[in-house]
Image 1 (cartoon, rainbow over the protein chains, first blue to last red):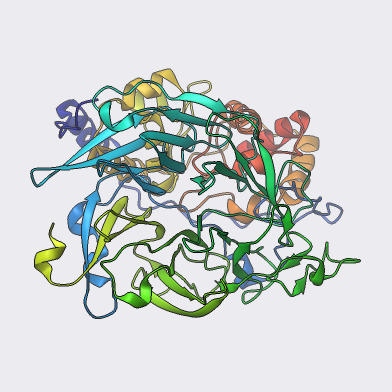
Image 2 (cartoon, rainbow over the protein chains, first blue to last red; image 1 turned 180 degrees about the vertical axis):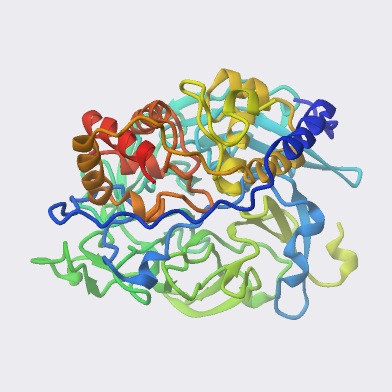
Length: 428
Length: 161
C-alpha cells in the first residue's frame, strides 16, 4: 500500500459543522438531571459476569466508585503535543520521536531490514514504519483485523495475534507496498474480551508463544484460559507451557540461560497497595504461577485461596508495583547502552487505574544475577504521569540493531527512540 | 447534515437512529472514529464518516456535544416494566459506569432518555459482540443479561428522567 498522504479537508463538512452551531439553540452543557429515584428495597445486586470490570469492587465506597479502566483517546496526538520533552532518563541518554500519528501504538517488532512494525489494541491495523532518506514512511500491512495487539518477526515473516487468531505475512518487508491478506495459522483460541488481547513472541526454540489471559478480574478459569501456549511456526503442535498466568502482555527470553520471563498483571479490587504486579521466570514446562489462588507469591486470594497454599505455586522473581501494569519487556541485548544494562530487563509500566494515586507511566530496569534471580531494580524513564493523570502511557519496548531502544505510547499514538551517547551518534 | 436524521435539538424522531444530545464529547469522538475506521459496521454511518480527517472528527464531536439532552417519550411508561427495569439497573450495576442519573461520562454514553428501539438493539448487538465496543467491556457486562431483561432495561432507560 502506498504511504499515507495528507487528506484534504472536506469543505462540505466544514460548512455543515458551522451550520450546526447556527442551528442548535444556545444551550450550555447538559442540565444536571434530576436525582435518580431511590433504589428499590428488594433488588439485591446479582453475581457479576466473570468478565465484568466491577468484580470485587466494594459497594458504597466513594473513592472506589471513582476508579475505572482508563480509555485512551482514539486519535493520535499531533507531533507538537507529544510529551517527549517531559520524559526524564539517566544522564547520557537521549529520547526523540521516532514516529507519530499512528492510532493506539502497542506492540513493537523490528524486521531484518529495519522496518518497525506496530500493533494496536483498539484499532484494526498493523502499521509498518520505514525510514528512508531522512523521511518517515508509514505503510498499512494489514487492516480490518480484530485487536491485532501481538506481533512477532522471524525469518522475514511477520506474525500477527488478534483477539482469537494468529496469522502471518511471509517476506513482509518486500511486500509493504501491496501486502497480501494475512494467512491464518491458528484460531483455536477463546473469544473473551477480558484479558483477550495478546502479546506474542518467538522463543530460542523457534516456537511461537501465545498467552490466553484469565477471562476476568478474579475468576476460576478453565483449562483453556490463564495460560501460555507454544506452537510450531505453522500453528501446529500447540501445547500449554505455563499455568496460573492472569494477564501477560510482555515476555522475552534470558539471552544467557534461555529461560522465559514474563510480566503478569495482578488482580484488581483487593486493595490499592496489594497485590503487586509480577515479573515471573519459567524454569520448567507446566509451572503454575498462582492465579487465581495466590497473588504476588505470598497472598492467598480471599475468595479462591481457601484450601490452597501459596507454596504450591511459583513465586515471582520481582514485584513490579501495585496495579502499575507492567506490559512489554525485553532483555537489552544491544551494545549502545552502558555495560550495566547489558542483558537487563526493561519493562514498560503502562500505569495504574485501580489506585486513587496512580503509579507507573514509566520504564523500569531489572538487573539480574548470573543465576537468573533479580539483583536490583530502578526507574529508567519517567514522566508520563503528571498531577495524577496520564500525558502518555508506555506499552512496549524493542531493541534496534544499533542498540537504540524504541518505546511505544498508546495514549498519544507515538513511538519514541532512546539512545545513549553524543547527539551525533543518536541521529543515525 | 447529521441533524436531518438525528434531530435538530439532540432528540431523534427517526426509528432506530439514536438521539445525540447530552452525550460526552469523548464518547462521540470514539463512535465517529469507529465508523470512519469501519470498526463499527453501520453502512450509512460508515459512508457518512468516510474521508473525515482527525480534526474533522474532533470538531464534529465537540459540536455535537453541545446539543441538549433528549427528553423521555411522551407516552406513559409501563409501571411494571419500569419497576423491573429499575431493579435490573441496580442488579447489573449499570449506574456505576453510566452514573446514577444514567448521563454517562468521558467514553461512557448517556443512556437516559435514549430511544428505546435503539437501546434494545444496541444491548443485543453488544451481547452478541456483533457490535464491537472500543474496549470490549459491554460484551462482558451483558454476559448474564437475558433478552427479556434487555427489553425491560431499554424501556426503563428510555423513560428515565
